[in-house]
Amino acid sequence: MEPIAPARRSWRLMHNRATPTHGSAKVRPGTLLPMVVSLAPAFVGFLIFFLAPFAVLVVSAFSDWSGAEFRFTGIENFRRMLADDVFWKAVGNTLFYSAVGVFIQVPLGCLVGIILAQKIRGWQAFRAIIFLPWVISGAAFALVFSIFYNPRFGPLNNILVAIGLPGGHDWLFDTSTAPWAIGGTFAFVLGFTMIVVMAEIGSIPKELYEAAACDGAKAWEKHRYITLPLLRNAIGTCVLIRLLADIGLFDVVYILTSGGPSNCTVTLALYGYRAYLNGQWGFANAVGSTILLIGLVLIVGVSRLFRIGERIQ
Picture 1: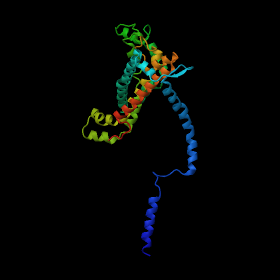
Picture 2: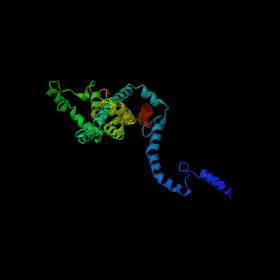
Picture 3: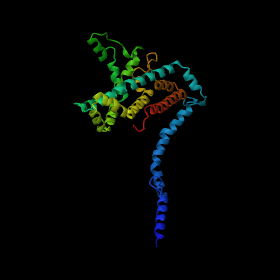
Picture 4: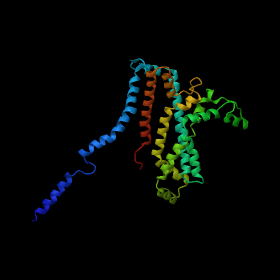
């Protein structure tokens, strides 16, 4: 009778080893069809609204396409684009607007988020007021600022006159001020960054701040050595989203200046739109492919710079 028990234990051990665990479980044949049926609508939508337009964009970028005629021209569109001075103006302006978002909007949003996360008096009202501009469409925002910058009755010039400075300046149609005026329309829209930062701060264990207080750390030292390092992923996400929005900036510029004066405010998106209006669809899609490539480079670069998604030690 004694050899039976070891044999039974050996069988049970072999059975446990042969039984698939949760991580290596195979899909049951009966569940395969329901899975395919449930995923089919999402896959069809992905195919129609993403893969098909993406294929058209990339393929037509190497063609002379006006809607009626289609002829492959190789890299001629890109060669023509790189030789155009207006294209390089659009690149410079797009980089400028991106810099405004990254170096003004994101830091200010982080600062406001950190301050309001301390639950100061009236913080909920301040949060709602600061977040409100974020939910307003770019077109409506541009219309408001077109009145704000108006050289005859705009509030900006009236404020300058009231404090004894020269007024009547045409901010949007002076080449020295137009890019700055465009940047000023969104530089202080801090709502998204503020909300992300406040949410991330809410997930930081309070014990870290209590331990720092026991060691005699001051308020700014707590934020310098605890808050900011733990906000790395949140800040990186805000920077990435801001960059992706700015490289495709169109509606604000189109409504306020249409890229003028003298193309000093034109962006890459507006540059491609002009080509589309002129019936140069292939050239416009070459510009769109360039914007897409820049976006992919930014995603990889910012993700690695901020190590987005990596565990913070």
